[in-house]
Every structure is written in structure tokens, then in C-alpha cells.
Image 1: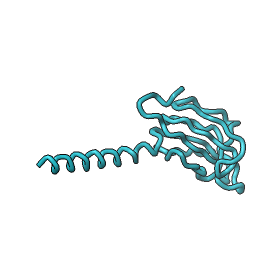
Image 2: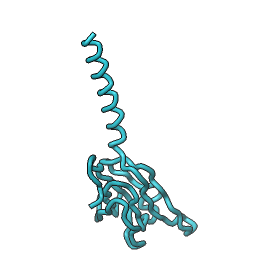
Image 3: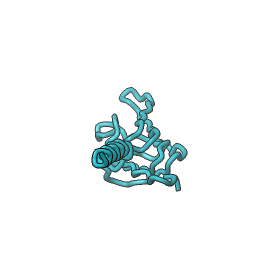
Image 4: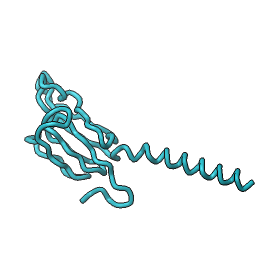
Amino acid sequence: MKLRNTVAAALGALALTLSMSGSALAATGEFHYKFSDAAGDELSVTLPDPRSGECINLYAVDSYKYPPGYAPHNETDAWVTVYTDTNCDGDEWRLKPHGRQASDHLLVRSVRFDQPVEGRPAAG
């Protein structure tokens, strides 16, 4: 009987750990940026709960056929590094969690989010 309870507790703990690890792979909140389409209209893109630790080439600005995005705004709980080139290359800037919108002069084509540190605020 004790072995059955021990196995059940271990399986429950494993299931809980696996379910929590998936959520730890994403920043919580939204990341926004703007871009101009072919007609010159300004559009905005929102990335909800973006994945952490991976380079993300941004929609509609991930090719040199198009102008880069601009005015990034990090409303997530993680630090983000924005890059002027695709594949997280080129000049880079760090944006703090829940920060203000950056200038229209800050150009962006790709981003990488840090994993938030559990147990303490990600902002610094």
C-alpha cells in the first residue's frame, strides 16, 4: 500500500513539473512593434506570450525586401534583446520588462526573450 502511494505521489509530482516547465518557456505578456506596409500604411504587430530563449524573426520585417520594424514595446515579464538584423544579428538593444515604448528610430527585425527568473520579479 505504501509503495502504491509513493508511486502515485511521484507520478503526480512529475506531471506537475512537466506542466510547469512548458509555461516557463514563454515570457508572459505582449511584445509590440510597428512597420509600414507596401502602401506606406503603419501597422502594428503583437506577439502574445513569446517563447523565451529562441531567436524570433519578426513578421513582415524578416526580409531585406521590406523596411525594418520600429518602436518596439516590451510589455512582458522578461528582458528582451532586439536586433537590427534577422537571425538575432546586427546591432542590439535590451528592453526591460513592462517598459515604455521605444523610439520610432529603434529599428528591429528579430528578438530574443530571456527566461523570467522564478521566485523574483524579472524587472530590474
